[in-house]
Image (cartoon, rainbow, N blue to C red; front, top):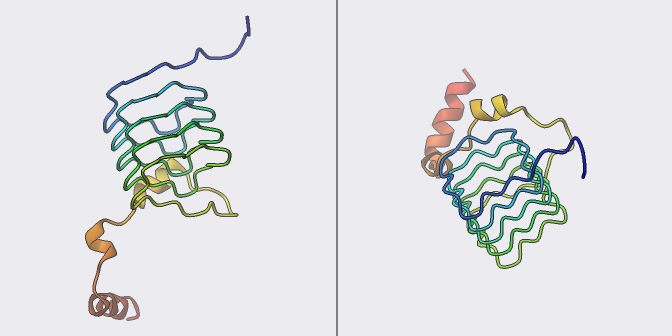
Length: 142
């Protein structure tokens, strides 16, 4: 028996909607078909986690470690993967419409508190008209 290793988390089909799991160690967790919609997984360790068929719609996965995660068939529309480690993750058949998958930065990663203070812009903020942007920019240049 291996010592000093936490027990494997098994939350198959669990309803975890809108749960705060910031920074949680879920390495190797079994989250198949779990409802993780709207979950905050900022900075969480999901290395080698099994997320096949899970619902991640609108989840915040910024700076999460998803290295080697099994993510076939996940529903991840509008999910924020900015800065997440998706190397070796299997996203075959995943639904990623409007997911934010910007590459990780070369600099230091922001802390979960910094990300919480600067949430991603809402759809209304993202679609500001050019005239509104000019008006905002004029206010900052004074």
